[in-house]
Amino acid sequence: MRYTYIGDRFTAPEIKRMQCDPVRREDGKCRRSRMGTMLVTDGSKNYIIIARLLRINKKH
Image (cartoon, rainbow, N blue to C red):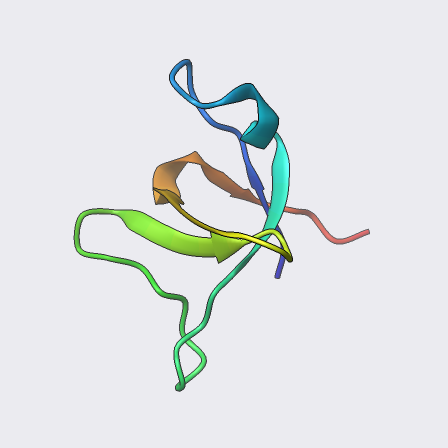
């Protein structure tokens, strides 16, 4: 499942509109904290971002 990180006005311009994948736990669930942040990867780097600003990419 791919996500698009839309960001906000405080987000660095290089990661706005970033395509990313969630980092999953051993049981297959996404790593999401109680504070609403989520661990995602863009293939080379991991980011901890606000989960509310992620949008699921629609399948074509």
